[in-house]
Image (cartoon, rainbow, N blue to C red; front, side, top):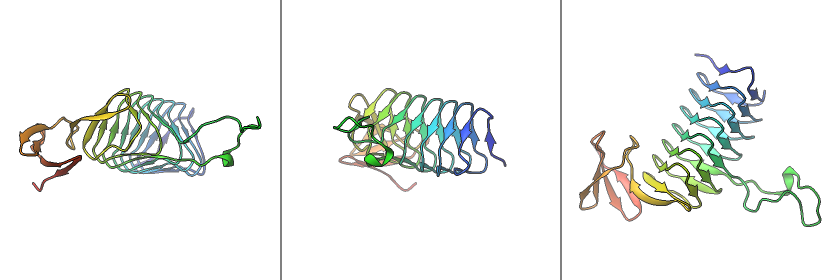
Length: 198
């Protein structure tokens, strides 16, 4: 396999791009960013300095992943998603001087394995999106999302559970849920969902 980088993309020489990955037109990958194998960075997407992405991640067109975000294996980031990185953003200090990079402390968004962030969602750092969770399109995530949760709205809240296939689970009663696509079963305990041995 090889790495594919379109001529119009801006990829730092200090970035590490894994085998089989593609960086498409007008995308930017900054210094010390690390992309695993078989990743896709769509047209116009931005990967900030030092962002870490695992294997098989997809950043759709115009997604903005600001440092110090961490994406584990198999994370999907939809079109025009934004990951913020500042608690209290300001362009200038109280004395009117322009802020510099070392005038603030960056905070990041963490996306656990297999999680998906729907188009035009905004994740307000610092938050963690749990493994296999699904953020509905247009949501504003202001707090951590549990594993397997389907969250939606502004602010985002859990409305369903989803399995590893991304399909909403069917309530079987007694705290058990079943994936209609894979047949996998899960057990709910409060705001936690656990995959049962199959």
